[in-house]
Length: 158
Image 1 (cartoon, rainbow, N blue to C red):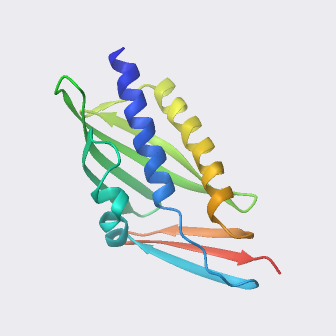
Image 2: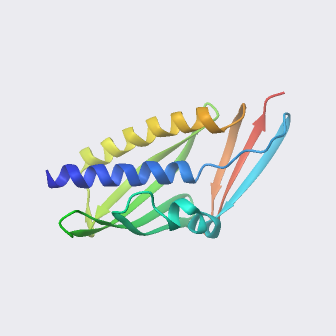
């Protein structure tokens, strides 16, 4: 049961942060556009500074070349607190951005491959729902992550 609670909280945390890092695309209707999202802006966003789950604390997002690292402390009802770190990498398939969990650690110990697979499944479904609700018609062509920003390049529908 302890593993199930950890899985649930980690899945919710990663799904929430996946939606956070998606840009609000520009209102243009043709051409190629870029949108830049800085690490500072992500960490100052309401979702990071005021987690909707009381059990999630000390949430931070660290951009590193080619990946996003999410750190958080999760406190369970019996006051047990665990430290988590999740590493996500982006891929673009058919003009859509997909985040894949490369690794998860709980209190410094790596999560099982089965747990990582379950988290990736949750992220994939939450991403599809978010895209349908937020993004204007268009096609993502590139995403670049540096130490300080994520740059999205996309072409809009003509």
